[in-house]
Length: 188
Image (cartoon, rainbow, N blue to C red; front, side, top):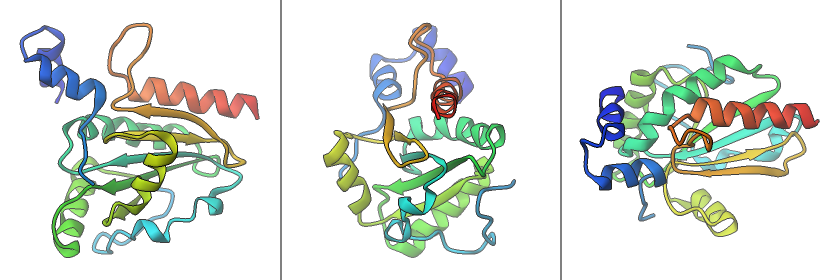
């Protein structure tokens, strides 16, 4: 991925790739906060109750296994999980727009989680209902999309596509999301 980013930045890949990295993929439809057995199925998003996270800052990331920009962002989310206390910050990945029968999708999610060493909570939005609900409310238009909530459950930030540092224009999910999380912590 780093070599692909280097090629984009050096202008050797088509503009379409640059746009996909900036906006994200469109959609048709170690240790973690909650350890799960490696073979355990990833719970469905309908089981996710954001109210259960009151008292914590929540980073809610909508993504898909097939989405290149999402795969660029995942290592930074893993790094964020290591950087902030799990008692203070919840990072939740919601896989959406996955295609295929649930058993196959579960296998793909498990493989992706293992490949990237995902250390934060994962949920499967197999029918796209959760993404659709937030998409209507917050004008989400593809993955990755990330919502940030304060400890009271108030929406404090939204990032569509892979977050970029506004000063440099460089892709920097760790820096951008980390600064936003820290700002929410500091404002509390």
